[in-house]
Length: 194
Image 1 (tube, rainbow, N blue to C red):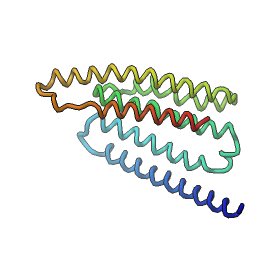
Image 2: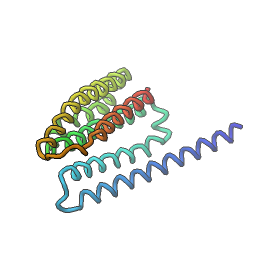
Image 3: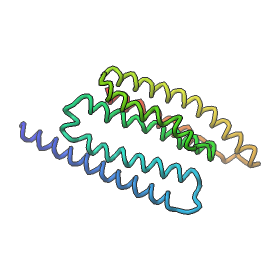
Image 4: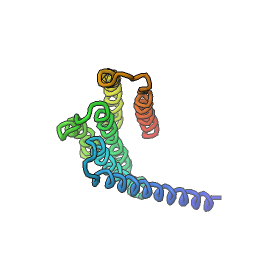
């Protein structure tokens, strides 16, 4: 029975590494596609940078399966905190979608650097209580961004209304769905990270 379980776990491990590798290549190739197209919108350029970053995180996830990571709680939590850096990338995309050309280097520094510093502060201090604190900060950030995006969606709808005379067919429900999916994914990630 034990040998069968070991083989099943090993097969699942190989499957997970394979899927991470496949997703890595997909995001990398899509990022290259968006980045190399000339005269594309700023939104697609922002998306290309996000896809490049996500591909790096997927590459990191392959390393996450190595035994030296799984056996060391500090390193494992460091890797999980690196995953938390996805949160501002979703924010970059949402705010660029709602207000074109607003994502600049300053925006990335303001929203992204604190999330990038968290894992390294955690690793240098080595206090496991920081993990929960940083998770709580990410949740608080997401709640704040949610309310921010709610007001921007209303502005977006008003801006569309001012630009076009017939908006009867305009539907922004997809935007609400994106926001709720982002919050749901964060919620599930926080639960699974504990």
